[in-house]
Image (cartoon, rainbow, N blue to C red; front, side, top):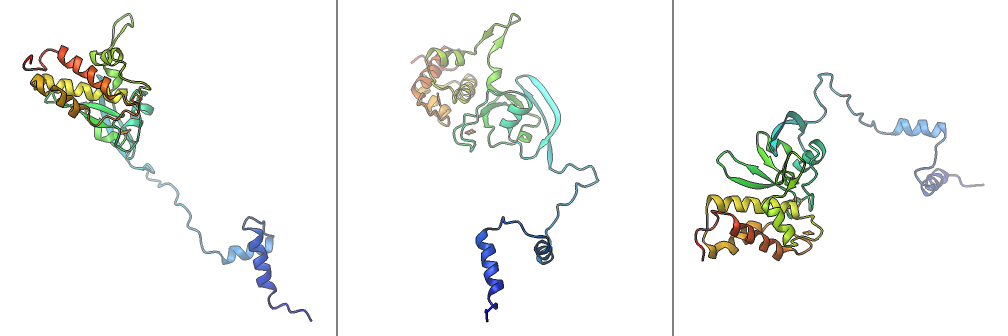
Length: 232
Ligand code: FES
Ligand code: FES
C-alpha cells in the first residue's frame, strides 16, 4: 500500500521548488486568499481638499526678478527649484551632500553683506523672502544682446582656471562674496593670499584647477579699488 501521509508536504515542497510565481488554480487561489492576512489598503485622498504632501511657501527674488508667492513641496531642495521651477540651470549639482560647494548661490542680506549657501542641502522654503544671486546673474546684457562678463568670470577665462567647468559657478559665487567682503572690510596686501585661501577653501575642483583660480581671484582683488589697505 502506498504511504500518502507525506504527500501534502511533498506537494508543498514541489510548489516551493517551482517558485512563488507559479500560477494557482481557482481553488488554491481561493484557499490562499482566505488564509492570507488582511492587506492594509491605502486610504483615499482626504475629501478636505488638503494636498497629499506638505507644502511650504516661497517668495524669492533671484537675479533681481521676483518669483512667487507659490507653494512648493516641503522637501524640495533649492537646486531643484532653480533648475525645474525657474529654469536656471547654471548652478551645478555635484556631490549633492553639502561637500563640494559646486551648487552654492549668493544670498544678499539687508545689511549689505552677502554669503554663499549650498542649494543641494537647503530647502527652497529657506529662501522665502530672501534675495539670491545665481551664476546667471553676474554678466550684464546690453540692449543689443551683447554680454559682458563680470570681472571674476573674465579673469577665470583669462587664467584658464577651469577644465570641465563643473565647479566654476560655485567658484564664481564664492569669489564674488570674498571680493565684496574685502570691499567692505579692506585688508593688508600681506594678508591677501590667506584671505583667498579662506574664501575659496570650501570649493572643490576635481580637475585640480585651484592654482589658476587663486591667481585669477588675486588679480581681480588687486585691480578692484578699495580691497587692499596698502600697496605692500
Ligand atoms: S552639490 Fe552641493 S555641496 Fe556638492
Ligand atoms: S574644472 Fe572640472 S571640477 Fe573644476
